[in-house]
Image (cartoon, rainbow, N blue to C red; front, top):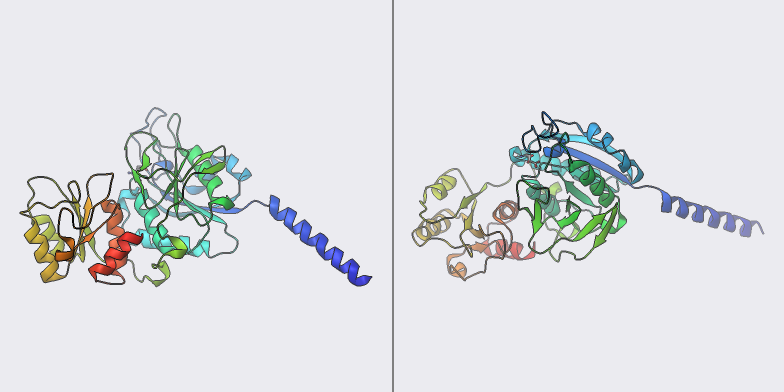
Length: 355
Ligand code: GLU
């Protein structure tokens, strides 16, 4: 009898806990780094002339009181800079802070407010080095907080909704801009003046409407928990040096040589078309690869499509790598991470196929 009563009491508690957790809000931490979303202009009509990275995280959160209905929100000011000034030091420090947050059982999701210029780089880097299934969402804005029709508040509201959503788990790091949910690996800033600034040639993962995500695809590439890279295994505040050379007609080899002299371990060739290299540049790249062991990685300055191996250049013969569909700035980060593990071009190529 007593046993039965205890059992039904236990069942009651379980049901109560289940119903509480059904209604309990998730805990989301907003990690602020600066950018236009924290920007301030002289007047409300200054939508493009303003100072980025001015407004502190608490003011950002308080400007959108509706986010408290979506989640228990707290804020951390990780950085206060314009994103073009982010270096390995800031990137690694941010990754470590985010890693610490997602390891906490009390944190269900993370939103990172970020300048839009290098938002895609930070998103991709975190996608590669943070092992978690918890949603990590990067968000920015194109208009400063003081502008007419500022886009930051709704973007932040939607980003918090996404980070608080259990449906957003295990989708890799995401970017929320202008109601669209993008995968970190293929999102890029495509327009530098309008609010629909971010695009992906493979399409968005989903759309966020009135605080609810609607999903349409998922990325097939390795990320987060499935990544072989882990911020916990990366020491120091610098990644192996990798730089990008932008391709055009009428080039001179000096930029490649200067990067080699500066100690670059890999050079991303943002080539024309299919990652092409002018015939008068090929000998320089062959020399840097063969004599100095510098990895030559062919990406493209063309924003869509992907670089085909052994098409424009005999990559197998030269021991070069193709960046597949990663744009030069993303290729730079994957190459740097790859070089923390190996200097074997075949291994690096495998990574470029898989991520
Ligand atoms: N260049 C600044 C940055 O990336 C402002 C641009 C923006 O956030 O939209 O932080």
